[in-house]
Amino acid sequence: MRVKRYVVNALPEAVSMIRTDLGKDAVILDTKEIKVGGFMGMFRKKRMEVIAAIESDASKQVELPQRKPSPEVNAVVEQILQTAQRAGAAAAVMEPPSPPQPAPLVSEKRMEREQFIINEIRDLREYMVKLSRQQSDLHSLSEPLIALKERLQEQELESEWSDKLIEALQESEKNAGRVYDRLEVWNESKRILVEWLRPYSNAEINREARVVHFVGPTGVGKTTTIAKLAAEQTIKRGRNVGFITSDTYRIAAVDQLRTYANILNVPLEVVFSPMDLPKAYKALSERDLILMDTAGRNFRSELHVSEVISLLQSNEPNETVLVLSLTGKTTDMAIIAERFSKYGIQKVLFTKLDETTVYGAIMNLVLTHGLNPTHLASGQNVPDDIERFKAGKYVDLLLGDAEHE
Ligand SMILES: Nc1nc2c(ncn2[C@@H]2O[C@H](COP(=O)(O)OP(=O)(O)OP(=O)(O)O)[C@@H](O)[C@H]2O)c(=O)[nH]1
Ligand SMILES: [Mg+2]
Image (cartoon, rainbow, N blue to C red; front, side, top):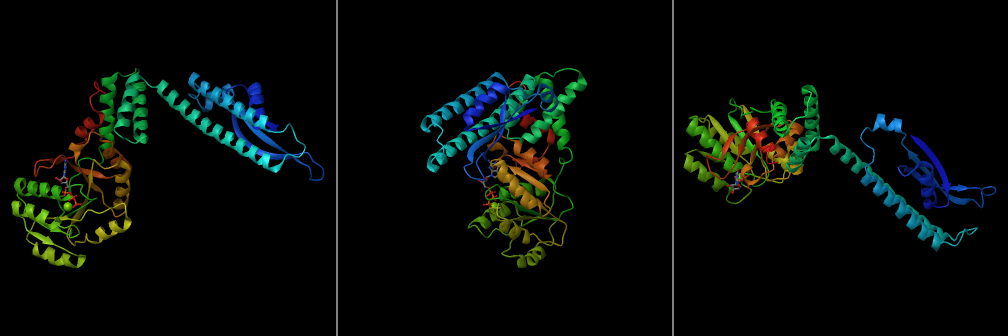
């Protein structure tokens, strides 16, 4: 890298010097106002120090193998330089020609203008570097890899994971000694993603747990899911199920669960505070499995999280499942997952699969927060619209059809 320092009256002056000395690919690294000359600390003149640099070909190859600006980037550079010059020229016209002591007001205005230009150049430079990097990344990817990257972006998979997948695919292509076609990219992606999910899949609600609590934001489908699971446990597994609800917060919430309790012939206990829990457990002591419903709250609030956690006490083997709807935003889900994982919650159940075609959130939450998905619910029908989470089936949804993406 060649670095050069210029001391000038105004930035535009430096821009044309830099262009002549270092060429049009040069970048401005720093600018600052300095004072030069004078006598015994007085009559010093304000000047601008500009540090510019150009990457030498050698360092370019070592540090940034793909960052050679494209013609489009060069066009942007050209535009910046012209804008800077025009703005500088305008400033120069408005200035009196080199006054011995410039009026403070004029000089302030001039500094403001210069600062504005500097900021603009900085922003544009950052934008150019980003653009250049994106372009060179895309240039170095094969068409099927670009298609995959776009698909995963649409699926809102965090770029951390899609980049890692692309890297793994490139590595696999290297080992195979050829570039994969679309179908091969899709098949290999499936293999890799299922492998990544392996430690977290096959999670089911602990069979040893006698009490299972369901927590989650408002309206995600906790109560409906409890009814679905209760039906499965009673009808398919012949277990004696009991319900507890602590959702006395919302009018009609108890009635909702009571309706399911009546249909399924399952006893229901209502608790208003942690103090009511022992009585409820005693009333359900004959039951093999107790499913506990809780009120949906805004669990972005830590207070609400600790409130609901305080209700989840049991001396029996127990487990807590976080219920999240796939119609929620990934970032909000991540915050909630983070809050609950602090309390050791490891299982998650996703609902409303039928209401979305964007599935990246599951992968993000599993890989980033280490949550184990137990089930996917995909509709309002009790008891049918729920099934165990299966990594292969999920990855098929995430990747979609190779030919149609
Ligand atoms: N499309 C679809 N709707 C669902 C699913 N699960 C639940 N619902 C619907 O979502 C709505 C809310 O369901 P609830 O079970 O009451 O949700 P909740 O989490 O208990 O709600 P609160 O107790 O108010 O926090 C109802 O209309 C359900 O029928 C699902 O998997 N897909
Ligand atoms: Mg509910």
